Image (tube, rainbow, N blue to C red):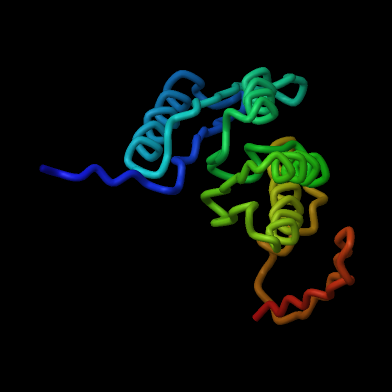
Length: 186
């Protein structure tokens, strides 16, 4: 006779969120992301599929699938959300942190795969703030470059001829002491 061993840990209800910008090929990219996440969730024996939510959006979209996913979280139907990168999850750092804090209170963790950040980590807010600032700078650089008028200082740092310099930047995060970051360009 064989014994059936039941796990004392319930399986996590895992979901994924995908979003593509208006300029991308929506059907091909979204289908690829859905397939990838379905395989990833299905391959993990500790997870149960709780849904894959995907939006195509421009800056005015209400992101209906994102809102549907948040409703399911509030109903207690999702424990974990996988997202490729922070910039696909939130429109701003403040917005993202507010949503993440709400989800954390509901017991829902968000994993940003590109950045390797899990919001169940107590230090994740700090990392997310930095990621948001970087994503915003990249977005500004792209939008300024696209129209031919680039005033973004990050673009200047990347495209100008290399030279040695040191830059200091003081960052203030809510509830944390201010930090000064020193970047040495060689």
